[in-house]
Image (cartoon, rainbow, N blue to C red; front, side, top):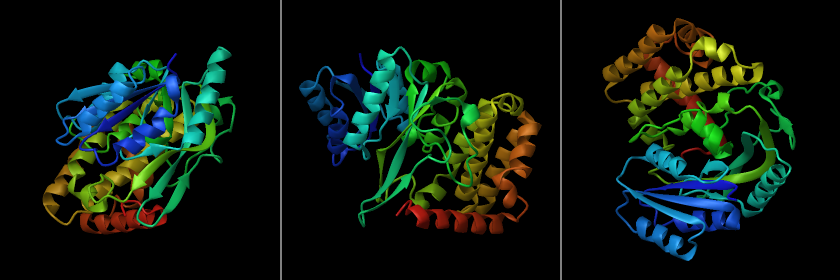
Length: 344
């Protein structure tokens, strides 16, 4: 039985994908590795085929026309045979000792006839430029080492989030959520880390530093300059997030999940404001695009609009003139970047 399917969306990844794949291979026959060559123009596809030839029972190569990160995640999900599904970007990697612990935990649960819908682990920002790191963990937010439900999850504060890097979804539950990520769009991990959550009833937190998130390349999507240039893609993702569930639906969920979903929407809306108002070009166009997003939310769900606009993180700056809003949100984001060296 394949316990976990790892999807590895890859685009022009020849220089670093081997490290990623080699760490996943330490999972042995209990893992499946779907390498999605997303229309690469270098040797990414050839490397995927090389691994598939060497590990035919573990590695599955997928070659497709370029569709972006979301398309790669979708392709992996469509082909996944593992009981659980996790996305590992080709420039990131997993800690091999932590992976053994996670697999051992899942294996024991499966053998006992039980298992979580969602396993949660820590992730680490690895700053390759200076060799430092920052660990994101959830020890104060949820029980460690036992099954629990959303009613035991404590409130997340400020920018604390459940990110794609920390999540291992039960494949069946993930598909049941109906999640499909848009193509040719960055920042789809925000949607992937939000929409499936109501389908995840039984949770388990494995307190190990599993995912190693590479920080340092100038072409990364989290680079500040790239973020402000791609503001329309963040707006697209934010719109999909607010379209996923109504205010009344979220209110009907258990307290822990309800509070987290509202928190996630507020935090990502703050990011969206930064992406949009923080750019120095096309100011009028940017303002209109952001206003269009607010109008869409208001027309679709007035309760959700009021919650996001006046009773969540965006309320802090929503009353400010557009230019000042951009300066304030940019300053806040740069502080966050300095704290974890994000985008550096």
